[in-house]
Image 1 (cartoon, helix red, strand yellow):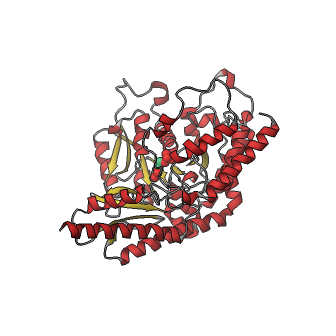
Image 2: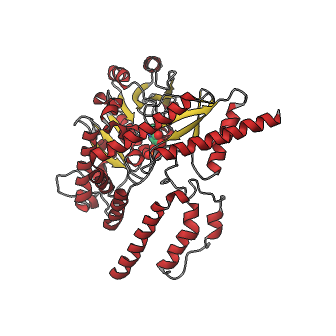
Image 3: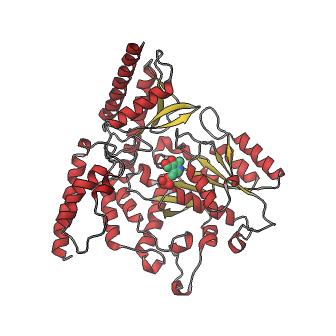
Length: 476
Ligand code: PLP
């Protein structure tokens, strides 16, 4: 593509994106297409000859846009509401242009060194101590996998050399996490060959937090059985409710048993940049690793997860493998040594853009506002006889359900309220189960969300509830 064509098409694409954001509220939040609609409308084979970008962009409008779920819509409140930002998009664009494969320092000094600098900025913003060094992976799932691999390497059981299968000298190795922990912990354990038996889920209290005394009991029992407890994964901001495990009470249990403590703050780590929320990471000064996802709540386009680790030496010991063709004589950190991938994307660029564009204060302001909106919604729920909160609201996620006195099957009612709202295209919320109750989850984290958007969902939910109540009256 000539420079002139590149410029012309590039301007068109930037215009397209600007219009998309400007009109975002006109699109349904959840894509309204049926399964296979896109596949059925695309050619079965690749074009023989190159096509004009005009035609390609026309198909973006006709085929791709309707098949997109609009995470950038301010009424996207499902799962964890996350959104990109202009600054992040520009970072991603430049990163694609540079196309760095940061394996060795020399194959990308910029990516290698900017990653160190920008993760250190974020560390300071989160008030984590300087003992933590940051390394960027794609997702929290992968960050946690690497943390547990480093923890296992620290056992000096020669797993790197001898593997785990067929070894009579190796008892069951165990990781502990709460029953509210994210499924990525279990997946990491699976991938590391520890098996599902290698993960023990610890009971939580009435507020969905890991019970440290149960953790202690479990570890004691496992030690008596000859198992090797080696890692605890605590969560700050669990997926279902954003509950916070009591890190300060978990730390001594880990220290007494010489176990690695990994803290999954994939969601809530970003909140720690807000001074009044900083205490959510209290205790991490004695943790071994912490993961946080700027792609969740720091307006950074997916994907970018940061693993903060005190023992990069162990990570390196677990993963470093340098074939002849990658040997160099510089005394520098080579990013390929700290994980499973050889080449790594230049992800730090977009986070650098985001932090510089918003500044610490701009980011704090937005996260603080999201938390205010969540508390506001929680207050409306508390004031209403028809609704109840099902979990505390420490950050910007509200767990609740409709509980009108005249309807008995509340699970069915709430599921219908959620499905009807989502089918309307006007908003998207998701659900979880808490104490066996079908629970609505409304997450607030979009860069465009304002109070009026929360009012909209609240009004829609109440309208749907009124309909359900009158339907019930008619049925009776
Ligand atoms: N940990 C927690 C607490 C999460 O809520 C999530 C996702 O929502 C993850 C880990 C996994 O995140 P990722 O998609 O970056 O792997």
